[in-house]
Image 1: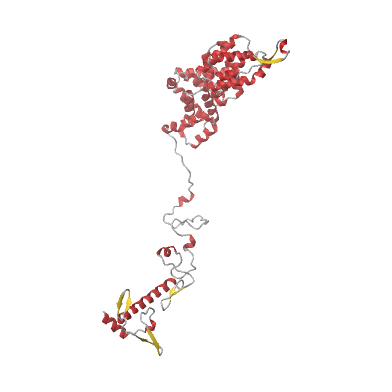
Image 2: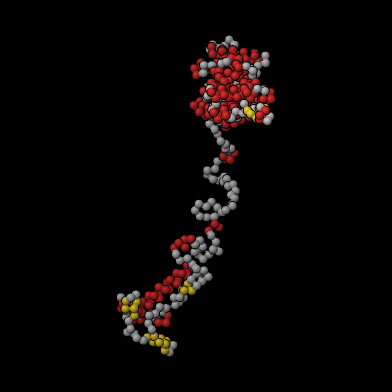
Length: 474
């Protein structure tokens, strides 16, 4: 191998001055270089070699430097660093990336063309939909497309809600009616029903609402009657209402099993519907002589009687009463006063307790205690005094009136006793006796008893006190 390299060098002489990395030393004589100390050994990569081997190595380094220079110049196209003939680095206007990572992040052209801008104007890349702020116009339909369909040009797409079947109807509508019993907003129920495709089950909505109201409170029945009146027209038709009440009359034998008074209640619903003009006035007459079920006959008879009484001045629109927060405060106070007067006449504490529960205002029971004590203060006999004590004791034991509501009622009397005393001169004295009895019977505690106000009185003492007026209370 060494012999071949030496023969090649003899055929292609290499000037020593052209070598960039030379390891030999010489002197300049007559415009050339004279090699001195040819037998001196030089060290290359830690190995000592002869001068002939040194020449071969220098030739290899020269060829490698030229290849590297050609490669960099073709890649950078005049940009960045380059190598000179002697192997020195020449600085350019910019530094070309040398690491693999920087080469991947460099988005400039490799061909030396273009202005160095990013590809696609910055709209390309993975997960990119286009330039920021770019607005796309509707794509024109190509009639020459093999998938083109002329019928699709005039299509109108809309959301289709499938009609409810009987199985899904109760699961969907029942929660709507039960929530209505809580909030009492008929507009919300109308909006929810309008979003559903009721289909043939539209006429079942009133019967379902009435069936749920039969097992609920009187206030819920009043809300159901209002709901039927508000739904008739915007959501349900008069025909749907008649079909629904027909269904109720047919199902009365089953409804009576769960609600014994269902026949009378359905009759009241029918009378209220006729009064609200949901059903026609001839609806009841159309059933004369055509009813075999005794429960249906009882319901229709009840409706006919109520309608006749309405002609004499009875208000059917208030037959259910109004409970809870639906009733105004003034009406609640009137109801409680009537309840107390009825109890004084009858003496039936159970009936008074039931009527107080039916008002469905447990947060307002302090008004009942207040009105009961005021009635005692305004009365003159011992009968009212004892009967009110017994009633409050009964309501306290059964927890119809809670301890907090009872305390609040007594405190309200304490605050208003000065005004009550204007009309009732003995109010302070009667109130002290009533509070003492209430404490002895366990209706109130000792703290509430001690808060009872007492009227101060002037008392003249003996002459030994100098005739000084002393204030003293009962």
